[in-house]
Length: 305
Image (cartoon, rainbow, N blue to C red; front, side, top):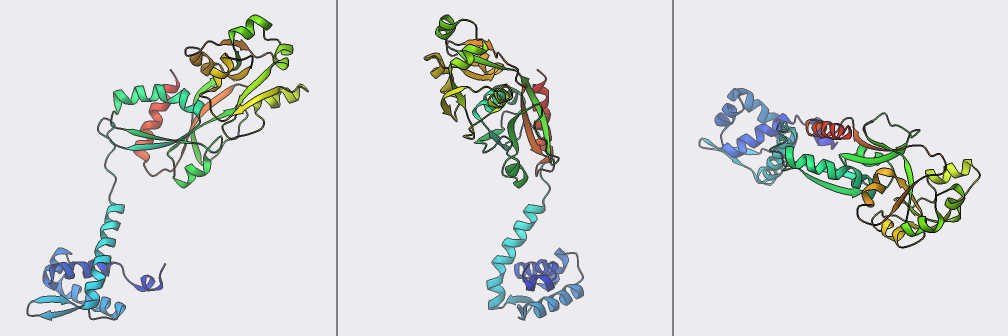
């Protein structure tokens, strides 16, 4: 803090602003619910602190000095900004609110959560808006802590790490499956472990990672898959698979949805893999507790459907 502010009673700025605006000690005292004597003493303290007369009397009016004129806009704007910042937030009314929420996402987490969420919001809170930002990691913890986002959509396996500062909603637990083109199924039949390892693979890597849970599970078996394509985006992946002999491992929920858009076969994985979990994270102490608490409740309710 500036040294001048350390020794200045900030209440004196209210005195300065009122006298400057009203040009009267009497009227300023009445507005601030002070006696004229108390306001005069406050003005003496302010003059001493700022080393300037600030006001001089002409008849019944108080006229500002040149320094007071230069100071007035800064004091007025600062007090207005402080009053705005300290003003209680209006009560959150979902049906009337125009609040905006920022989510950190990946293609898949947005794909899994937002269709159901937006359908619910259209009914309950049609004025809400959402900004979706690509997440730079599985859980955008730093962005949550810094207040840059309100919610983070992330995924974890059952043994994933937890964070005490972060509240979480378990949205979906799913099993991994493999998708391939119908032509692949016709040519090779059942997706055995041998066929899985013989095939080449497409892998979605949202954070450009080199290895994922599938690779770690294969490591435990002393095995390795042959990766033909790594891509950060889910959008084009099923179409590439449908027109090739590539295999892609992904959660069953996504595979079933994508099969509605493109011809794909779904096979169980021929080796054990821990379940896939989508979670929704928010900071326990965010700046809009009522609004975020309500949205969290909606997400939690939808997660049970």
